[in-house]
Image (cartoon, rainbow, N blue to C red):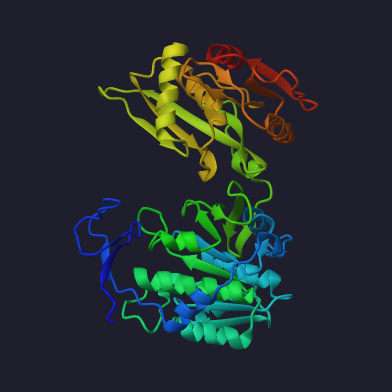
Length: 449
């Protein structure tokens, strides 16, 4: 019986029986692509019928079998190391350093593990030149320049590697499908077969995925659901620093980040990102304040800069880089209403240095103090940091893990820190750090400015 043709949305993966100009599920225009699903074979149906459920108590337990990738920052993001038999998707902008990172992993663990590096975009000579530049030379690293998934899995069965790297999944294809490589059906089927191979053999598989113009992983959303871990490699192409985040991790936290620096010899780990983010900070300058934020279990100091300038236009301009735009607009309104500062006739610019994005409310107080400092043209002390959430009435509210944040503040040489008064009765300050407790924005501005 011939399979019925359906249409899949490239944005959300929704299936519709006929083509439409707009996806009825997500509303994306011109995103439906023709797809012919293959009916399950008789052997697959038989295997489904013969499957026997197991008791939960009979399933063998124990911790996941992890191994170190040789890169501490990557191990941190993965939750303590890579897990045997896991499928990890690594995505990022072109040229951000995905292939460089994976090739450097090969250099560090190929002494103890056999690795198969599959490239569908570069030739073996190109990979050899990059490996020489990165200093990768080992007899346990094997290269395969192939895009046919059947040939790749056959080569992997013969070689029996401990780890396999696919660069990239959008270049792979399954021979029995008429769709071109990179299409919805090819990406879904290739990822599914890689997942089945990884689970059945215990081979750890790293897969590189392209991103679209919006910054999301190219292909159907189901691609992210099938893999065990989704890593995003972020950073400004004009700066040397790169951030590695986990958007999904079945074996660990998704709050950790890894920090790298790109140089001529490849990616270098940055074990102390706070010092990196504060390097080159201007001294005795209005409009700058330091905050301690938590990225997973790691406290990081970030510098927030603000610029307030009178405008001649009826509608003042608002720009925010690295901080949520809507929250920045809310804090500007709170400053004008509760602290008596006038921003309605001034342009306001906000920037987080180093390409870091601050998502937690603990950065509110530092943002407000930086804006107040820029508006009044009064510098904040170079040895002062601020931590706290701001409410709509101007109150400064408590934040979590304040002790860890203060320890990082003191370790970087700061001597004063502004914190909320509420919830800090039993707080012990590190030696050499003076705690300034405030109830609201007016008190904080009076203490700091």
